Amino acid sequence: MEQPIGVIDSGVGGLTVVKEMLKRLPNESIVYIGDEKRCPYGPRSSEEVRQYTMEMATALSNMGIKMLVIACNTATAVALDDVRAQFDFPVIGVIRPGARGAVKVSKMRKIAVLGTEGTIKSRAYEQEIERQSPGTTVYPLACPEFVPLVESGQYRSALASEVVERSLRELDGKEFDAAILGCTHYPLLEHPIRKHLPENVQIISSAIETVVDVEKGLRENNLFRDATVQVEPIFYTTGPLEKFEAIICDWLAMKKADVRQICL
Image 1 (tube, rainbow, N blue to C red):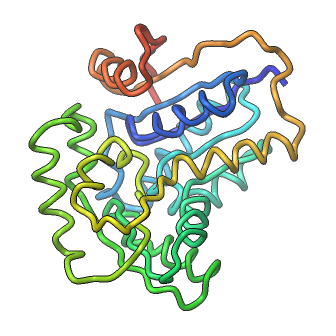
Image 2 (spheres, rainbow, N blue to C red; image 1 turned 180 degrees about the vertical axis):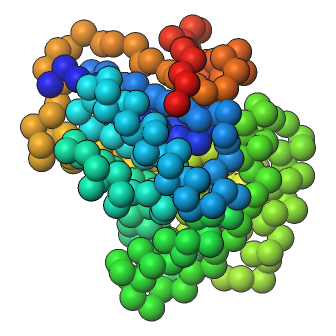
C-alpha cells in the first residue's frame, strides 16, 4: 500500500523511531508530526496529553496514513486505547515493545525504567513488565531534565553529561541488569547514560523494539509498500522550523530535510 506510516511525538524524540524505520523499512513512506510548541508532555495533565495526541492523530488520519506510531511514551501511556478506538488503521505504542525488550534480556529480573514524569506516574511500564514477567522488580526513575536537553539540541554537550549523572544518582546502590529508555528522546542521550550506569546493564531503547512491532503490523495487515522507489520522509512541527530541522539532519544524518509547519 502506497499510503505513508504516521509517526507522532511531543517533539523530536520520535526521530529515534524514524531512524530505526529508515534502517529496517527503507521502502516505506513516513510522515512525522512533532508537537514542539507544547513539548514536553511529561509534566502535563492526562487530559492535555490525550487531547494533543488525538489532534496529531486526526491530522495524520486526514493525510491518509495506513498505520500510526505513537512514538511518545507519555502519550502511549495516556492515550493509546483512546486513539485505537477512534481510528480504523493499526496504532502502535512504545511501552509494550520496550518492556518486552527488557524482560527478554534481564536475567536478574530487575529492571530500571527511565522516563518522563507523566510516564513514571502512570506506572504503565511497571504494569506491562508485571504482565509479561510477574514478580520482576522495577526501579522507576523520572528524569524531567532530559527532554528539554534534547529539544534544545544540547544532547552532545558537557551539560548533558552533568545532568545525566545527577539524575541517575537515585539508582546508586540498586541492583539491576536492564534499563529501559522509557522516552523516545532518551536514546539521543544514550552515550552519557551508558557512561553513568554499571557496565553489566543492558540499555533497551523502546524505539528499536517498537519498529519490530511496526514491521509485524505491516506484515499481518498486508500493508507493506509495493514500490521500491524510496520516498523522503516529511516532517511537520508545531514549533520553530530551523531548530527542528537542525536536529533532524544531525540525528538522521541528512543533508536536507522536508520540514513543514503545522497548526493543530
